[in-house]
Image (cartoon, one colour):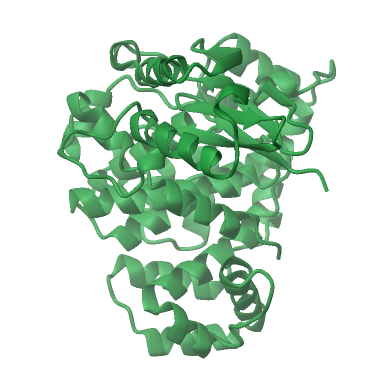
Amino acid sequence: MELTLSAPLGTCVGVALYDQENGIGGLLHLLLDKPPSHVSSLQPEKYAQTGLPVFYDALLDLGASRKNLSAWVAGGALVGPLQEYDLALDIGGRTTECVMEFLARKRINIIKSETGGFFTCVLNLNMKTWECTIEPAGFEKFALKDRVQIPTTDEINLSIDTLQPIPQVALKIFRLINEDNYDIALLTEEMRKDQILSARTIKLCNSVYFPNRSTIASMDHALVYLGQKKLLKFVIVAAIKTFFNQSGMGYSLCKGGIYHHAVGTAIIAEEIARVTEKVDPSLAYTGGLLHDIGKVVLDQHIQAVFPLFYRQFYEEGKSSLEVEKSIFGIDHQDAGSTLAHRWSFPESLLEIIKHHHQPENGVQFKVLVHIIYLADLLMSRFHVGLEIERLNTDALAGRLEILGLSIDSFSDIVDMIPVNDLEFSSKMALASD
């Protein structure tokens, strides 16, 4: 069976290192050049300075020969739209320099290096043939068609009307989280009433924790094994997955891309909330999951207008909101807000869905909306290849200030990305229904 490792790369840097003669190699995905000075990281693999030596030594321990090692390097791009902060911080450039210095010091042959620039890519390593490739990530891989069929307002409204709604149990959990009121006995009883969602939740738990066998047999068992907060996450994720499954390959750049992006944004938002202590992490997690629900509406029509969408987004450099407004008359924030109102979402989630691209427009929950914006931005820059997205950084300094953060400590902010948790989340995002 063919096994190919892949790393979608934006600002982050990927390194494929392998000894073809002895059949040993691997792929490393790096976020930063080094750990923030005040942090003793538990995830050394996130940084070129600490991760590369560990990666290198592990390959040698497995039997790789120093003289036979070859490397491919990719990533470190300036992902647009660009502001002065992107050029000054040069996170990808610094990480690339650290990688190149290490490879030169170890006298490792670099077969190919495609770093910098303005576009995202995917670094692939075939673990059977040791063939390595660097491919465009996203629009560059789509074949354009000449025909464009712009949907009418009635057709978009019909899409909103016909979408399968989020289950009532999940909506009740959203409201309780918003009120910081967890009556787990009541929720468990409510979950038992929704047999389909219960079954999906149990299957998801087993897919993530016990992929080769079914160990969790009931919601009560899941509660004992996972604990209250983690079980609530699994219920919400199972419910949201059903909703996101209604989207296809419009916005998504890979199977389930919108959903995977939502789960990743939720995890990063939860971590930012925990570190800044500004809002309840559970509420931030839920907001991250739901911020892009409007894309599921417009996704029904993206394929029909893709050439026009491509031209405005990719060639003209417009934001996703600008392109959506131009083509559909509404953007995914508007479409998501309509859904959220119909389903009686709490006001906190309404503000997130309506304003996550312009967090300063938030009113009662402005800090929460800023957290989701920042999590979304980090996902779009450091975990690319999932969905079509482009967030602006026009007012980044002021937006960070709302959270008690600063441009000067942006590396610390990037360090909030919990790589291990995101890898764990991919199991949740890709687990079958």
